[in-house]
Image (cartoon, rainbow, N blue to C red):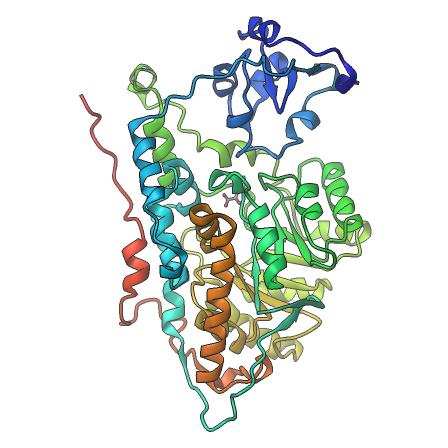
Length: 504
Ligand code: 173
């Protein structure tokens, strides 16, 4: 076993610094990646930059800790490096990075963060450009991204008055599991791009506030690390990208079930990753200008979409309805499809005996001009009522919505329209990227406070009293209506940039 092997000196590792023989160090262990260079989904160039050196800092945000071990055959695990001898890549602190750190020091105290939009405003200024571009970007012209939020503006309340609203309870159950509010932390990839503790921030805040975390397949932390960090009795779900190699998927699913995961959310809206041009432009601008001018004369420069595109190549575009019996045969966990976008597919999921669907367009990151989850919810509730006599919220077949949610009022609209709960993704990333765990706790506290006030003003003492008649959604399918601008949202939203002349 490599862990029992004799430690290798950093100097020896440093001799293997070329394409012909390339060793790297990750978390104190030496790996021979020579044969893997051309198979690395992110390309060989980035590995060669670290040839003979310690690559941990570059490796960490993008890969789960065990990825290198599982991707390389055991004979390529060469053993531990002698403590303190590893050659480090010299990290130059650029002026840009210095300025970013100064902005970090100038963050307002959390007491001044009044809503989820505020986190976005701060995150935009204190996150690295790369992390901001990756988290904030969406497909094509980002019209669906904006629509996800704007759709909530087309729904208005019909509150009830003269009810005794002294005591309130907005807790609920999601797939039979307790949740302090009808909100869950949805899965988002690459959590360490924003903060060194990555998704652990979400696990810890979820424990404190009694909400459920959906662990992403492509978390920066390992699955086991996130399950180990949960408190006894804390509920976690798993988001699943289905692998071309179904044995890998089977292993992931069965391991998750053994570790106590309470729901499996199979992502169905990403057989290929959408074009996130904000993210692409960032990678492009980052590229070495000489390299660009050499290769780009014919427009043939590598415009790869960086980390996300690189690590998504394993996702099986062949996934289809016929696979569902197999999923049912390998697990007893409730199965939910994440990314359903019309009533026909929701009906099929119901008819196939699934536990629910997430009406979602992947935060506007996949098919541009897909409708918002909240709009799809309205037609799903109507049609499943008509065709199967179902009413919602429904214990047996649960509807979830995500995308564009920034306020408890958004969540209450979804609940009134029949959703069991709503997933929130980016706002939580922004909260912990800018303020760590304290920020994430504060974000959940803000939602809690917003629920309290809005339930009272709505005249609903518990979520059962948040009913269909409390909202007017008659304009939901009108994609162009005059509504007041959301200054907070559009103040933060980054306008897309066009291509620019290079500096000469
Ligand atoms: O939205 C995403 O960025 C996403 O889901 C993803 C998918 C594959 C790899 C990385 C991220």
